[in-house]
Image (cartoon, rainbow over all chains, first blue to last red):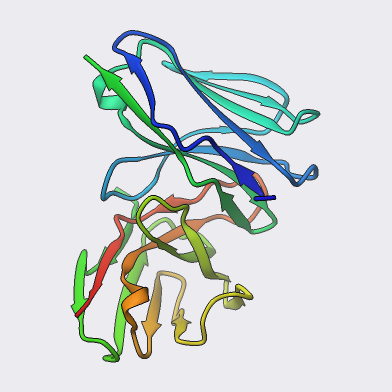
Length: 109
Length: 113
C-alpha cells in the first residue's frame, strides 16, 4: 500500500464548476497535510495546508480533513482554465513530506 | 522577495560525467531537501539536511551526494550520471516542525546524453 494515494485522473470539469480532489494516507499518526499545485514543467506550489479535522477555506479553495477516515480533499470552486494542473497531496512524516503521485485536473472553457 | 533559487534551470551532461546542481535560499530555513521527479511521478526525496545534520533516504543511490556548506546553500552532486538519472531535480526548504510546509525552487531539468 502506498503511503499517500490519489486518483491520477485526469479529472475534467467545465469552467465555473466545483472540482473535487481526493487523497488517502496510510500513517494514522500523520498530523500535517498539504496540497500543492504543479503546472507542467514547473515546481510544486503550496496552495493549502490543514492540520485539524474539518474544513479550511482560502478564497476559492477548501481543504477538508477527516483523520478517522485518513482522508484529505481539496475543493476548487468556480474552476478556471488556469486551474488546470496536477494537484499533489502531501503528508508530513517527521521532517519529511510524503507525496502522492498527483491528480491531473483539466478545466474546460 | 525571499525565495529558493536553483541553478541552472536546465543542465545537459554526458553519460558518466559528474554534475553539480545548486540551490540557495533567502528564507533562512534550517531544513533543505533534494527531490528527484520523473514525468508523471511524485517527487521522490533523495536526502535532507536539518541544519548541518545530513539525512539520506535508504533507497537513494550512492551515486547521489550532497553538501551544505552553510545555511543558505545546498548542492546535489551526481558522480556518474546514468540515463536513468534524467529527471527534474527539486530543492525545497522549510522551518523545522511538523506543521511547516516546504517551499520549492523552480527546479533543474537534467538531461543525459
